[in-house]
Length: 287
Image (cartoon, rainbow, N blue to C red; front, side, top):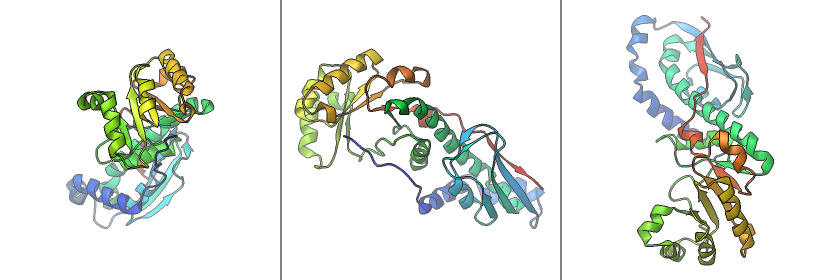
């Protein structure tokens, strides 16, 4: 059975590097609006709050961005928060807080939005033993953050990058000159511990692929009825019960209930990271 590495934590050195990059992009040290309006020595206390129900992600982000201030974070990554919940308080130089506010909100709003929508999908799928998987459809430069947020929301991480195992799709098959050529080439060159997953669009591809050797199938853009047929065929073949079966392709939340009962092991949802609504979080100055 295919099991991909899960992003269970964010390395602090990675967070430091990315936040430095994001602050430089926003020219946080050249915030002329703040420089010209707020006295250098002014001190303030600011509160970070949520305006909606969210699954929170961002404890390390807040602490790192405001590392020169006194920071109290009252929640942990993965906590479910109701509207009005106080996430953190920042006590320090006013200009310092103002110049970093937007970058901090951009990150934690997005990551909390991903965790929140992931939990929504997971709550439907979990009773049926079906994993909700992410994809590589992530924001450039934010993949580790976003896959971590999926994990925090209760989802499962699919492969992290192109070097993570083998996933043969229709274009690979076409470029290789057919399914048989593609699988023979892969099995001749891959490392022994690499798993092979194959995207299929028809029942006819399954017996041939099983004979040539695969560890999983991605059933792409199929109706629930078609997926049931495919799963039944896969499980009936030798070693078929050990095969990881994944459904994918346009499976929205509205359609999810029809797919969780098809017998698949997982459902991959690109929308978890590329079509999300950022969480409603704001920062206000108490004084």
